[in-house]
Image (cartoon, rainbow, N blue to C red; front, top):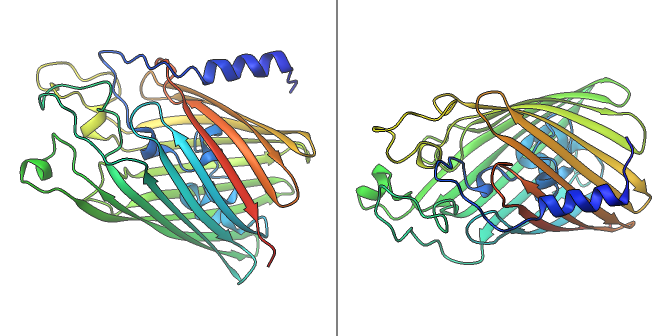
Length: 329
């Protein structure tokens, strides 16, 4: 793969076009529902076959086992719509035989319900995540040739304006989803993994949809690696099914879980410079996605800028800045 400075700058301009253009038949989920981490933005939240440790907390807990490190993580997100939010976390794979990861998501402002009638959508607010906080914990254990991971995600959220909970007067919903994964080594540099996310989260399923992943990663060299993932995610009725669904035809594929094929890659340009990129295409509807990023690193810290167009038909990008600090133990 050959990268040129001109092409990379052009891709960055395409990704970072932040002027939101929302179509009348726009059916999607808030970015925060899918985004796993700052680097996850650049890989479209793929990596079931292996990924960075912070993304692994939710994508595949089994991938926490490598590399051996203690890292403090911070991310600031500018989503395609709605409030800015941040992530804080830590991953420890050195202190005990069991690797552990923790992440915390919260927002810079309180959620405001759309100031429109219940059967209408506002481009400014309708795709803002109603979540107040999202807390995830994951553990992983390495066995011979395979690692096993398990974790959970706690969600504290406001109900959506068209939900039964809201109509019954509830102002807050909480629930827990179960995450689990497996990661195995086929040969040197080649891994395969599978994971399930947000199981048993019925009360908050509209904010933590069940997601299943199957993926593989291949390290062609110390400089270049490729991941291929297939991700299946349950639909979120409050956002992906139109409010007037009873009077209009359901958009193609919205009556079945979304299946997205994602190809992502990382390229180590220099010892301190890494480029990330990914492309996703849905097998069930007309969704396509594009993402990329750049990471600068030294021995003990890294700083990354990542951006994605989670729905290419929309002229809006999700952007994130990530700081990782490796602590001596």
